[in-house]
Image (cartoon, rainbow, N blue to C red; front, side):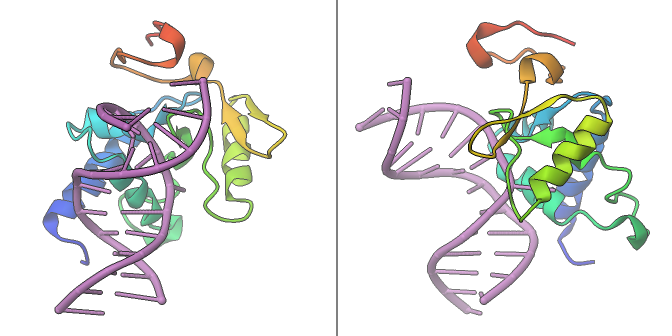
Length: 133
DNA sequence: ACGGTGACATACT
DNA sequence: CAGTATGCCACCG
C-alpha cells in the first residue's frame, strides 16, 4: 500500500477510464484526465500507466486488463520511453486493427481522425474535424 | 529531507 | 507557425 488513498483513487479512475476505450480505438492522456474531471493533470495519467502492475502481480488493474496501448499523446504520436517500447505499443495496436505510420524520424503515429476515441466533443482537435463516436 | 524528472497539454511569446 | 514557459504531482536519485 504505497500511494495514498487519493493517489489510489486517481490511479483507479485512470485505469477504469482506459478500460472504457473500445478496441481498435485510441485516445490521449489529456482526454482521460478530462474525463476524470481533472483536465490539468495529463501527466499524472502517464504516471499511473508507468506504475501499472504486471499481469502476474495479481492486482485488480494490471498490464493485461488495462489497454494502456490505446493511450497515446495528443498529437497521435507514441512516446518513446525506452528502447523499443513504442515499437511494442505500435505492434499491440496493429494487432487490434489500428493502422500506425512511422515517419522518417522513426516516430510512430496513429491517425486520430481515424482511430481517435473521443466521447466528448473536443473544442479544438486537429483542424476542426467533428468526429464523434 | 529535498530537488529534479517525466507514458502530457495548454497558453503565451 | 514554432519554440518557450508553466501546471501537476508521484517517483527516483
